[in-house]
Picture (cartoon, rainbow over the protein chains, first blue to last red):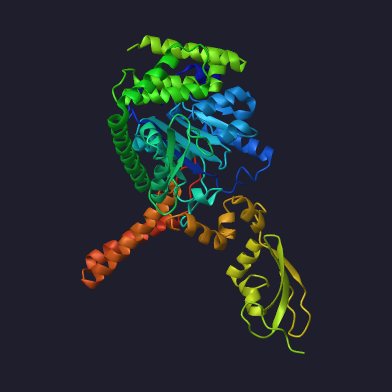
Amino acid sequence: MTTWAELAAAPCGWLSDHAPQGGAVLSSRIRLARNLAGRTFPQRARRPQRSELRREIFERTHGLERLNAGAWLALDELEQVQRRFLGERQLVSQDLVESPEGRGVVIATDQTMSFMVNEEDHLRIQAIRSGLDLDAAYHAADGLECDLDARLEFAYSERFGFLTACPTNAGTGMRASVLIHLPGICLNKETDRLFETLRAQGLTIRGFYGEGSAMLGNFFQISNATTLGMREAEILEKLDRAARELIAWEEQARDALLSRARSLLEDRIWRSYGVLRYARVLSAEEVLNHASLLRLGIGIGTLQVPVQVLNEILIHGQPAHAQVLGRGDQPGERDTWRAEMVRKKLRQVEP
Amino acid sequence: MSDPRCDLCGGQHATVRFTEIDDGQKTKRTICRTCAEARGLLESTSPTVTVLQKLLSVAPVPKAPPGETPAPATVERSCPSCALSLATFRRQGRLGCAMCWTVFEAQLVPILRNIQPNVRHVGKAPRTHARQAELRQRFADLRAELERAVRGEDYERAAHVRDEIRTLERLESAPAVPAGDEPAGENQP
């Protein structure tokens, strides 16, 4: 069995080189909501009931081969910074970070698959892949779901499909999402049209950290808004098509920016490079915003830095990562550690 | 003195009085026996009504002969399994357990119509349900084939299909084998 410390020391498995459409799309994620038959849903269950169910689920899923050792973690046994670390790796939701009582998470050793226990539903099964690869992510999540189906009994009705706490998740219980980088559309001030277009297609658009989060670093999370009455394959196809259309739109926006103000744009990219390469103190938000311009610079051929290095900077630059990896308890110490980490990574691949 | 008219159907002989609590709003109603039975407010021999009564967790009202003052009953729709009330569901927008989906089906369908493309699930099913659906499909296919064979006067084929249906029926009606036990009855004549 893998411990939290081993997970923290391991690289984030879903960040890999040569991902399909990896320049624009950071990750593709599938989340399947499932509840157990005959059990009160987590939000309505009492705390001891929740803890008991977590114990039972951990017991029944123990040694699941697909997870390759894996980590079974009770969130109320972790410290807040440890929970936030898992949140920053997209392995648990913000809700589980904030209120850990009776809740848990099971994580595959390579961190590409996991399932949360006692989130809004008893089980939230998840798989993440690098770049735009919804089919691979679904295949992984579906495999894990089948394993769990063999060991637990899911609440299901022929009419409403998988029965979830919220009617917006019924049917397939599936939320598919892509984390996509759209700096050209943002710089062109086309975000209003972006939101409108996606809403009209029945898709949801959110910020970097999902529900209710701000638009940081020009990253957007696009996901299906509906779950009932459509097959999983149709939902995936629709989202994949929308993502490809967004990538084409982003290309057009970049072309327009370049023909209008190439030197200004290149200046901004090199200034951001200068900050990241030489600054001595950096906040998490600064890293996110400057790294966004570097990513754009790579996309339009202004500078040559492997996208993988930027992805690592993005993940490791987050607050809990800086606290855990840099062992800095004060925000000031973390900002110094972060700047050093970024400098070191960029120095290694200096253009 | 004649009975008041039914609040629901407008018919005469409204003898059942009750207070409905919906979303914290109390409404006093007087309705006829037919409407009361249909809503599961009275004891009935009909299994659907009995189930409905349980689902609505309503205490049955004693039968009152026409003209007598009926006993008032208080009705708050809530889930018998997790005790979630309709009012709480409306306020929080979250269901408390799988049974809530049955109890509040009438309220859920219009909500789902608003937020989902369709109100019938078409995607993946759990292992056990998928097997049942497969069996049902197999039955339907075999019955259609049997009909075709009979119509075409291919009695040899019809007999064969009929045997296949019987075998399948036997398999399906056999009690589920508990995990770890050996399947029994393999050498039956």
